[in-house]
Every structure is written in C-alpha cells, then in structure tokens.
Length: 182
Image (cartoon, rainbow, N blue to C red):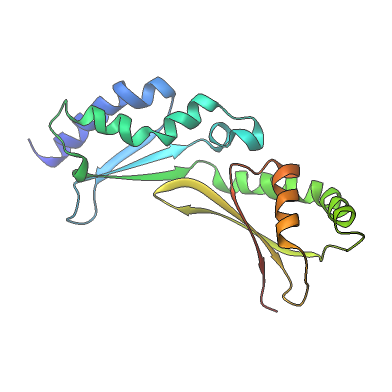
C-alpha cells in the first residue's frame, strides 16, 4: 500500500472514530520531512474551545485536550505507530476571533482602569500602547494575549494581571503584561 492510500485509510478511520463524532474538521498530508509520515492538522473552533471567555463547550474542550490519545488509540486498527504522526492545531477564523477579543478588551478597559485605581489607592494605570494576540505554536491551540505598555510607566503588574483575568474572563488564555520599546 502506498503512502497516499495509507493517508486515505487514516482519514477514513479518524473521521469515523474521532472527528465526525465531535464535528471537528481536520486534514492529513504527507509530512514534509523524513522524521514522520503524516501531518494531521486539526481545525479548532475557538467559540467552542475557549469556554470561559465566550461560554464555549466543555465537552469540545475536553476532546481537543485529549485528541492525541483518541488518535493514538485508533491507529492500531490500521497498523500505524504514534511516532509516524505529527499533530498541528489551527484556530479557525483566528483573525475574526482576535478582533472580538480586542473589542472586548477595549469595551472593558475603562472599568479595568477604575478597579485598578481603587485597588492601588488612586494610582492611575498607564495607557495601553498595544495588544498582541497569537497562537502560541502549532502544537497547541493555546492563545497568548500580550498587553503592551510604555517602558517609562510603572504599575503593579500582579494586581493588573488579576483584574484583567477576572474582568475579561481570560482564564483560558496565557496573559502577559510587558513594556514596549519606545
């Protein structure tokens, strides 16, 4: 059986045993280097995966978090080993999702500034200079949100971080606060 036939067989198997059951899109191609044979790209629906932020789906989150096990358990049926497979995650409609996150941040930023001022005895939060949002890497569906501030501004990172997590429901994301270059 040639590699393309194996890919077709693997697609059919995973579609019936794993992906269709949870309505998850995926693709399989020949891996671009010699280390592995198959590259499986899993399309992650951010509106289901990030359940704290937007009321997603707990079951969907659990499936994505354990999908490597589900795939591994299915491989024995067609004689493929784990080491032959590489998993990648791609967040569907990521640009639109990022825009919605930024919109939520902007809509709630005044509230965050007020809460910070109360907690810090009237200290003023320095202006937010930028927001960066990106997928950490293709091996995980996790997203990082980086809040950038001017380097000359001093503020209490820990308190601000806690306020951001609680007021924006960002428990699902890695949140970083950093000073940007001038």
